[in-house]
Image (cartoon, rainbow, N blue to C red; front, side, top):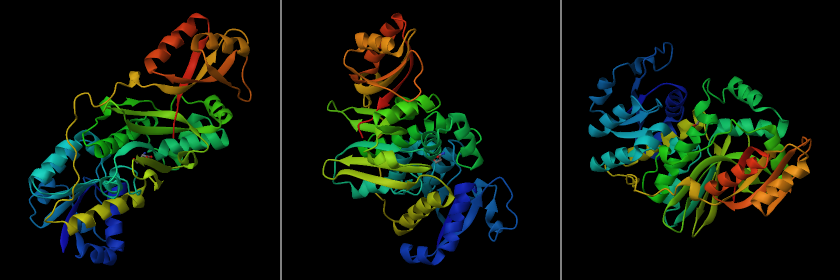
Length: 415
Ligand code: HSE
């Protein structure tokens, strides 16, 4: 029997224990060996469970147990998860994790350590929850040059935006509802400010392009500034607003990578990904677009991905699954300011909406006006093509000098 230890008995950890127990027979058949939990590390008490006797508060007990060959880390956060995972790999134990903070910050280091020790470090559940995406990119699409990835990678924000779009619910009300339904944490800042999606696109970028992209290198915008007016302009344009993480290989060899709310055309595969669902589009030179859709979070979807990695580990106890990327390359990420993009721009002038639009035309040149229902006096919305962020900022300053104030701007996606 393969003996495993689970670090953390929160939402995902308890799901992993549940899936391992309820699917015991089929897992043994697929792993070609029974898989049993020997220890669960958690500082809390869990009396009354059928496996309450497995709990320990002592990580060393797990580290020093020679019977444990695989450790599942589902604690979340960088520390102590990083120290524990590193210690496990240094002591000959393969590791499976769902921890996106850990993989986004320390993936290159841990993959190198796993390679040195001929162990597995697997993290299918770190992006897209129950959606297979790490293995498809590293194995199934391996014959392709992946050129672009774009995804709705955060269920909490997708739920909030869906409520804003479908029910015209204000951002703060939609966030409260997400919290009541358990789709958002009490502190939702990592979700609504885009940090969670940023970690996930960094993991996918590192995997697809072979060298680590750190969250600090990525331009990140969240959805806290998105208003119902923006939603109405997106509708007038023919689409919806989604929080998108995207990475694209540029002809100069660098990566364009960003997380931002974007206008998405109704015709895009990603526009119909609603509620807490995630959708990830991978563009390969041989395959064209491949789209993955499903539950990106939650106890059992995430546990399903974790346990699948455990099965893979059990089947490859003496061999390494090829999963590797190098540490960050200098100048691999194109400065965000350089990338030309299309934008939706929302302004407020001092006279009529027509006057505000005319001033915008003087500054921006060829722009296209959008008119939303209920437009206020002096308010104007328009789209502009192919401006870098640097050029955009200059134009916005010139517009301000003409008495027209920038209320906001939203990237228009190409997907
Ligand atoms: N809050 C995150 C989401 C959890 O909704 O996607 C999974 O990373």
